[in-house]
Length: 138
Image (cartoon, one colour):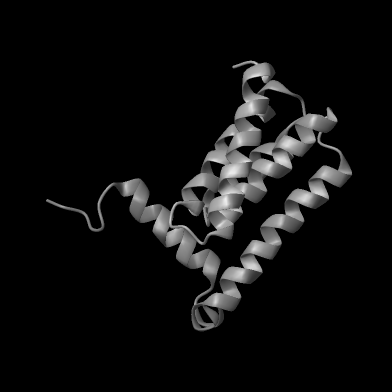
């Protein structure tokens, strides 16, 4: 998809997500996920060394976090951090965004964070998802 098509879509998605969020509408999380997906598409077109490419990478991660898609945000951040041309400022911003989200989850679930750790819960959830069923069948 070209930037001429993507930029208006991103702008409209951001406007929609922010409006739904202001209204506290139930679709606001899905709207922010749309923003993340579109920003990711922009990031695929532009290199990390391009200012607009760096902005798209930040936007994709930030929107995923706002959509409460922490795993997606972490995966995006890891992918963007591994790209050539990722400068120190972008690297620090992406790491800070994910760290802030981790702290917010730990604050929301302090007992889990203190007893087994949020990362362990996430690892177990990923293992269950990857095996395709909650428990082995058969």
